[in-house]
Length: 446
Image (cartoon, rainbow, N blue to C red; front, top):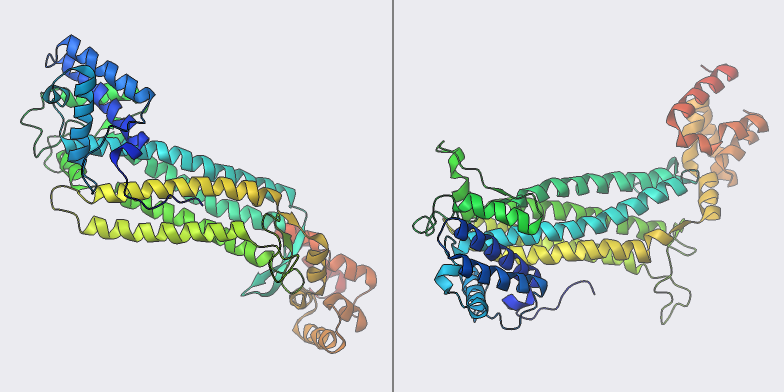
């Protein structure tokens, strides 16, 4: 199983969030010390306590007593822990910080790092698809349109198309990830400006950049009445989670498309398409020995189902926010963390257990290719519709392939038929077009 169980979780169950809080408190303590708000000894004690927590974020004592996601309770619980470890009063530890901007900033740190892990899994799958495109570039099969026979295409092109689709989604994820580098620490207009010292935001964000090693920046501040409203928009709950959810949905749909394609291509073993062979990680069944269950393609479909469900949750949460504080963001944040995890882990498992071991069943692909009735399109392109219809009638009545039927009505020599139905040319559309033009000229049919 890739998904976590469903028990009610506490603050202490999210070490990555605890790490982010410790980094924020460390950066804030250094900023307050620079502004003269904290004594150097108090700042040093807070920073030391934060560093201990960063080194070991698994803290059983971090409880909030709250059964719902509550940024205020998280901040209070963390301040209590730091006060106990440092001996500094909670109000000094929290100087210049509102629970909203601390929670908002912590979410950004956690999500940015989680996206890195997700991208690693997606990139692993992309590289494997690219490798398969190269490996199968000379393996031809008959394409399908509406599951009906179409014209030849290389398996390399099939896997290359899979790569291109998924790569577009992965590139979009990278662009969305950058949205989480903007933080509003110290810029909560509702209840922080009364006690946040001038310069705190710039110092705290600069310190946090050094602590985390991430290229963080403050949300834009400007005298313009519109451009200067970014700190309010950040508090209300901006659309970064919606944009992330939408991109994850797109990635998950692409993964499901891969799973569904592999489902069909490997269907069989004798009565399906059966042109791809998947690794037998779950072979056999109680009533059908020898059956190969497509377990990993099924996993991709399950990842898609869960991701699309969370995307709907994110959409409704965004619309139904409070007017001034994005209180529903917390719920979406935790759900997106789970989706980021299952997509990243799912891609790695998909590579390990399925995609890296896929092989082309050459005999089956060749047999379908040679017997495809859709090859009549090639005959029509060269000889015209009238002769193509005659070829099709002979092929259907005598159960012949299109090349055999063409020979039967003596329209071409065996040598010309072999040249015309050299399927390797279909891997290069330009070469195929030139060949058909030359062939028609030689036959006097141009």
